[in-house]
Amino acid sequence: MNVYIEGCKLIIYIWSCLKKIAFTLGSDLAATEISDIFVFHKKKSLPKVSIIIPCFNQGHFLKDALSGFSAGNTEYEIIIVNDGSTDARTVDALEAIRKDGFQVVHQSNQGLAAARNEGIRRAGGEFIMLLDADNKVEYTFIQHAARILDSDSTISVVYSDAVYFGAKSGPWKVGEFNLQKLMIENYIDACAMVRKEVFDELGGYDEQMKKIKSGWEDWEMWLRIAFAGKKFYYWPEVGFHYRVDSASMIGGIANSYEIRNKLLNYLHYKYYGKLGQHYITDHVIKRFRPHPIKFLLKLCMATWFRKKYQRMVEKNKIMQGL
Image (tube, rainbow, N blue to C red; front, side, top):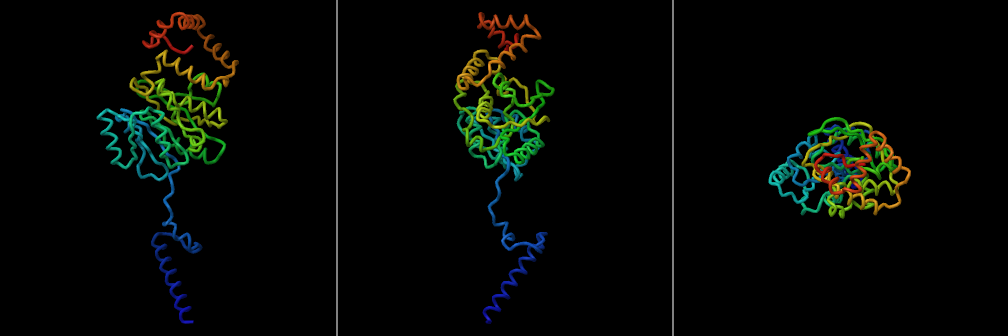
């Protein structure tokens, strides 16, 4: 009997101590279960969003890309993947960023797709936010995109409008999702939020595209996601800032006629039969109507004077797309 009484006293004493500790921490234990008191023993929760930033010799842009972000924020994690940078300034910038508490991953130069895939593999978040090192994302977009994905399990990708900065300024209106339009041109930038489970299911970015040197791995990824029946959501607000610079990822290659042809051939071969013929016809007509003579001249040059046409495109003397 004495043992029972002493045991009860001990339990009451422990309970009173726990209440004092909780009161000191500012918690109300009036209706709290004992198991909840030990919440601080639980494993630290994973971040909701993982922001993946591949970087190759673009260290001078990283300060802009990371502006407004904190390494200690528990709502998101930032993973910078150094894709074998050889520039001393970039190496120094990455080391400074690592010392600030951001996660920096180093790998040999394997290309943009491989760098993104490595970041995704290491990501602990439920949602993946993709950001190129030379661009900037609005924190409000990250918040809104995460809420959208949280509230509707049928949505896989959230993308937005943008604004240009650097050598060019002005709005970039992207528009509602249209698969047929996406087959014609890559009108959705890589800066978007995607459920991590989509990458787990479909695989990451196509690393074979490094051989083409196209810089449009995101285009192939969007097509693959779309053809898998996944849903895209368009947020009609400015979600990111797109830098226009001659040294950007696309800048040095977007005007190459030969590379663009290789890219289109690769995508058309991979997704042959997916594009409706009526949409191709409509697309050509829309391009023809504003300047029919100019359109026909470009078509003739591209068909019978390919080398001359390519040189003019590369010198920016003629717009590439028909």
